[in-house]
Length: 222
Image (cartoon, rainbow, N blue to C red; front, side):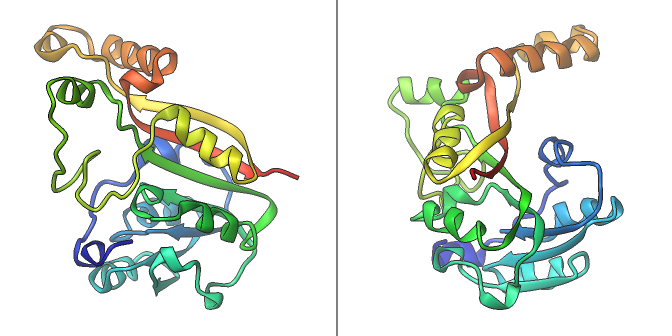
């Protein structure tokens, strides 16, 4: 991660679409890039014990309210030895795009996860349709947050995100896109259940176009 990343504090409601994909059981989670602990806050209510890693001292303080342990470390340099191993789940919600060499971290995880453990990953999809429109008109500009976050070093689509995992020794257990179909103001006159169904249909059949984020569950290929 960049020096600029250490100065940012990521706070949100937690990545519920990714967390909902996780096994319904308890165990140990290693949250790489834990932010302010928003995912950990949800996971501990489900019985998980969470260890967090962040590059930000301020996030370390905030995440400590929910994580059993929190380590300050730059994931570009790997996972600290003191983090230990034997994790049932390794969580990376919007982390790999911040790394110069994400493949190094993916290989490091193999030493930290149990044999049948799950690697849960979320990545922004750079080809989400609003971005395509911007690119078409020659606009490629970084922003304070979102898909074009100024601290992103790499960009992925739904397709290339999955290929990254497979190329680095993982098998995909589940892959989904979380996104929306462009209804604009029309959605105000359509039942929410239909909007939700249409969003899921569009993201499922055209993930590189309508997926805002790409979600993967993977295991080490044996």
